[in-house]
Length: 324
Image (cartoon, rainbow, N blue to C red; front, side, top):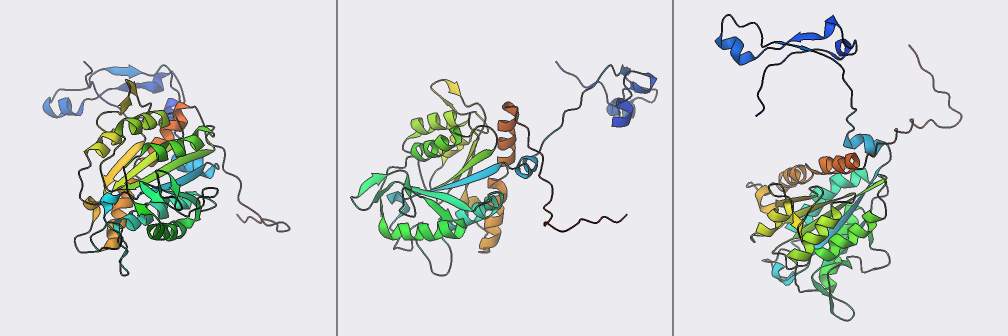
């Protein structure tokens, strides 16, 4: 098995000299040095060659023009309770936001900073929709199938409030349609110029677990991440399985190429003093923690490097003076 022999410190300047007397190092094991008075070193190591790999960051790609596309999907199943009653997770209290609105605002207000036009598709699932009362698992919150885009997070919140007045909460809780909906767009742009983030806010147990797992395994090959925020007091065991932190998600014997799902239960972030701003900050921090790594993992596996950032804009007719 692998064993720690020792360590040494050097610099890029020294390494750049290549194979020479400057690149022969004593390897020291700190634990042995502390225990043995006569200990000198654990041998020497000679540099033969080295390579430097540039580590690109999430912001390098954003500065290079990669666009983040943010989509929201909200659970309109009957298990949320009647929106007109204060016990419902969709209840519109005139004095404070419900958990759905808080989760959307917390995550969305950070992600929207990486989206240039601030126009976001917003979907609902699990409701009977007008005019014919059919059950839909990917309906536009603004009621316009041709143009489901909302203007900013406030636009999504407004469309969400309007939907509660026009649709009938129903069921079941199917995730696969909204995952596949975003995946279709991600599949069309795999050159690194765009990356898709789907936020699903839900209250309960998934009804189409097999189909959702298959959809996620397929989406793992695409420039896409999925955030799931669980609201309410339900058991979220299935969400933890989708998260795939401990065991990589699989479908029909096929493992997901990479981990693209992040799940958090909203109840873990509610501030006991009733400070909703603090709750939202904590939620956003944890929810968005994995996105940059998931983004970079896609770019790395595809060998996509960021474009150089464009030079700063100088208005025409103005000469840029530099003083030294």
